[in-house]
Image 1 (cartoon, rainbow, N blue to C red):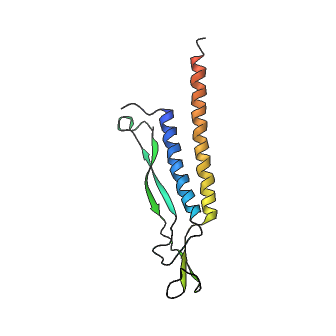
Image 2 (cartoon, rainbow, N blue to C red; image 1 turned 45 degrees about the vertical axis):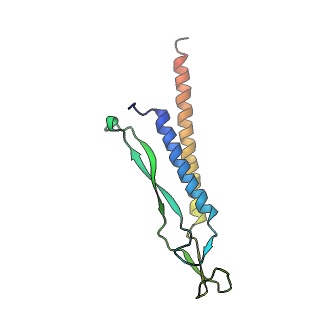
Image 3 (cartoon, one colour; image 1 turned 90 degrees about the vertical axis):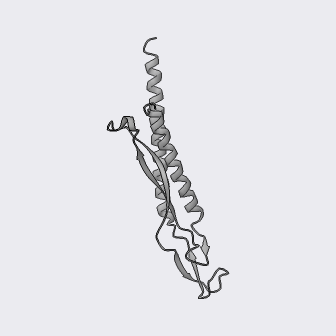
Length: 137
């Protein structure tokens, strides 16, 4: 197994942020969805990230990240009284997703910024490698 490079670490970090952005897109797409039962109501999803330390580099501080799971929010869906709605249950209630669009937008900005930071790391590493190659010229 080869040691992790800047390109490996940043690439995996960008991949993890892409998983996060996909979850945010799914949440925002379902922000206004309704359901007949609380069990079927859309619940926001969040990726679970975990640091990965290569066994042969353990203790060196070098690590990368990966999305290891996707968790559904445990917050109950919003119960609304709407007896005339076609999805209303026998008691006249519908259930709205528990997605908070403001929270999702903040999370999207943070994920986007993290992605951009890793692009900057890759760009800087590339630039330094090119400068190193030109030292002998």
